[in-house]
Length: 246
Image (cartoon, rainbow, N blue to C red; front, top):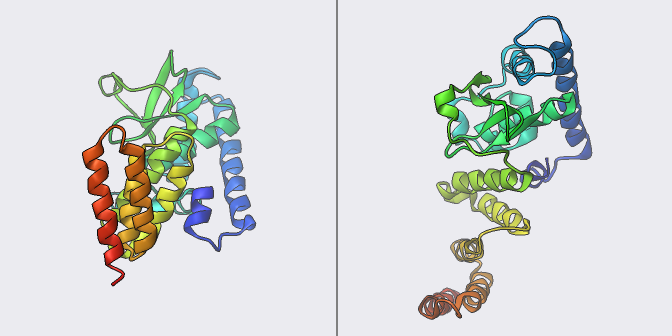
């Protein structure tokens, strides 16, 4: 929600509250569906919860992904995904996770390489893996082999921000998006140090030559003890950035 608020600064509390209420409403539907006498598995089992989530979110409300979603920034913004019923795999998995949590279901995100999915059940025991991007269809046992455990909140947020940066990287006119995505990623308790270098170079590309040069020099100091030649090269890069002011 906060990523979306940064992406759209005019987002007000009412819009965020509406998104939260939509998650609550969907969760109430899932809880009622899971408690009904129909469906796969017995009450409280991963099979029953997965069926109820798929029936409500995938079939009844049409949450799924499209190839075109990869070309849209709003596919990475939760409030927009709730409104459009479509988005990237990781955002749709967040919808499943948050709706499931509110309904009392054991749902978690699973950061498979290249395609985020949702797990229903015990991450260390019996669980089903489903693909919210495809409406919640279950993964086959063969596809599920080797899948990691539950993705934590920080991992999920980091991957969402990585997706936004990747989207902006091929669209130079949206360098401001890349910058705020980097700034948010740098606020996370754990992040790759290279993000500081990426941000410094982005500032230079945006014409913020002094800020970029200062950031390059700062990063050079960080790596000087482990890679002096690279640090020297970065200092040269910083001087070149300052020279662009002329």
